[in-house]
Image: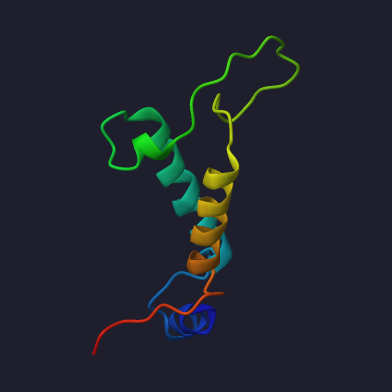
Amino acid sequence: MQALLQRGIRSGLCSPETPNLTELAESVDDTLFQRIMHYQYHVLYHLLPERRELVYNIRPRHHDRQLRNQFVMLYSFWLMIANGILPVFTAC
């Protein structure tokens, strides 16, 4: 996919300032996570872990959720699919 993006840049279809595929995937992933976190009617909102109470504030956090192993495994699986590690099968 990165090669296809590079070909688009070489042929003039994309700007040379176009971010690489990893940067694009990270940007989309962050946007999706923020939308799920802040919109309680999102279809994936119910999969978020419960909120946790922070008794200290040493550094700013990205979220106030308590991560569970199940959520971490689901997120890892999603990353593997998104990064192309696991093949995605489609019906012909």
